[in-house]
Length: 110
Image (cartoon, rainbow, N blue to C red; front, side, top):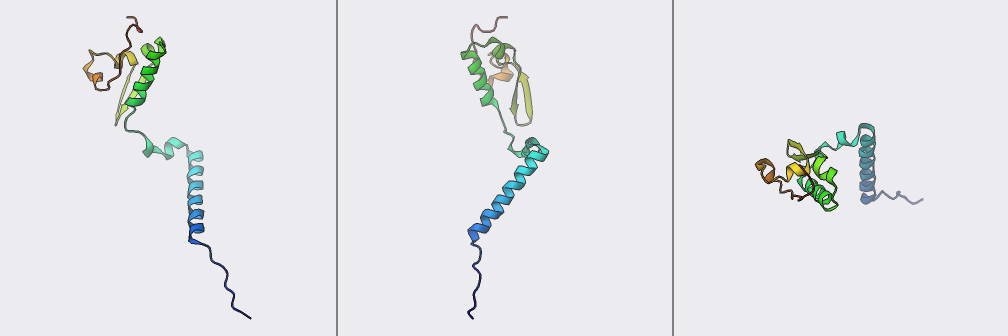
């Protein structure tokens, strides 16, 4: 009788199995404990671009509530600043000038 050895598993198959198990564990933990808890390191450093874009859309669509009254939160590192697009775009406010959020003339009446 001949010595027959079984075919071994390919290295790529083992890598795919390990990768699949890792992904399943991450998914299970994410659904059990919540994604914010699990992915705390994915938090962006700054959301100024998103706030600027949202304010620009509110201005273009002439949405006075969204631009003048809706409070938004700018996050830069560990600092959080709450205000409206109108406040952030005020050229007289030196604190907000650095965020470069554009004014929307005539939308907010004082």
